[in-house]
Length: 522
Image (cartoon, rainbow, N blue to C red; front, side, top):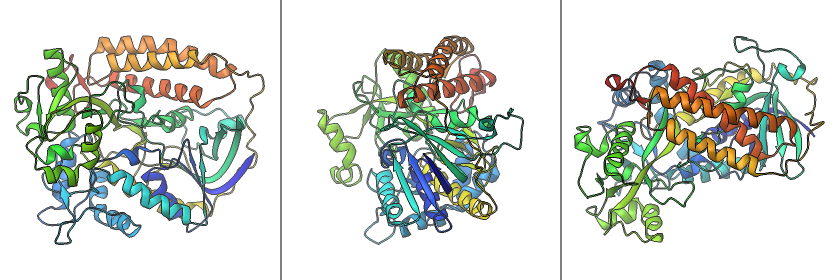
């Protein structure tokens, strides 16, 4: 089956949906999402979206906080664009129906999180992402120009490679013509021809054993772009959220939002003693990379599987009003956070690198844009400031939409694109070949390429990964495609990029900390 659209959007989180709503006023839009439309990282985002709203906050303060958190590896121009456009983009979300919490005065209730010098995080209790997702999905489903394909898996983006041309990463004339997508119900690989394509596929947290990401976060967009000879950047910078709920049997790990530390909750070791002041003068409100390394250090010192977050001294009404989801979740496993400390452990949370994009969300491949966690805009540098991710998504989806609208009318569909060729492949009847490789991959990355690294660990990870890579590619070439096999292939691809970029950075900075270069960390 073949489809022809003006705008193809791959992913249904805040980045994909906000872009779709804007371009839909100008042409036919198709959104492809690998599971249900609400199964996104956006849905799981608890804390909020950072934006300058009121005095005494200023754009310059927010810019300064973002640059400092990123250890000044950020692109300052991109930081300025993002922060100065923050207020307008948040107002737009409100106009689309998003409800942020307000004070009795009618002003928006703003939270403060680690690394922020002012209160500037808009939120909806501790379910901000799901509230934004709700509002956007409602608007999308009402729009006559938008077709939403749920439970379709994107296998690859289409370029000149599929016309038999040899493409190299140094080429600057690579074109994206759309994508091949797998319809799991029919097992058919369908062809979608598009004048412009946006990758908004989210992150890659499932490279690790413990992650706050939904199970769909398997690095699909980054892997597709890299296979198409596109350019990625800063792949070594993986943010581990310091405080996921310690509950080993649960996947994904339940996030304990940083906002609860902003309200006064304090980290304590296994004996109940505060420890963060030994690592940073900002204590429990230090940036995430510092807090995650501190917790990792305390766990190694004590031999424990977790530390504690103590919220017992917070007013009960504040917990019930601002953190009802966390209260209910903890209570469901026998923890009353008003009386008990919360066991927490770091978990893979966000990839600061990704597909390299410019100020309009353009990738190195023509007619292909990227926005959200899949993209490396330059905003985050070596570490993302809390609650800047949702903001980044709406800012660069807006800019990408503006550019795509200007370009698409001068573009024609490339009708020579062949249908997917699956001749000679057979159905793989041994799922263990996929599941075991995935477990091995996650073990390698968690053991050797986690919060703390070394040159030797990275070399060992690379050597182990190469065996899995060869086995996976061999299986891919011979098998009828399934979502599980494609996800494994993408995870292997992104793991390789993380190891490669980490091995090339001979310093400790931000989220990349190596015991071989300890004195260069901020």
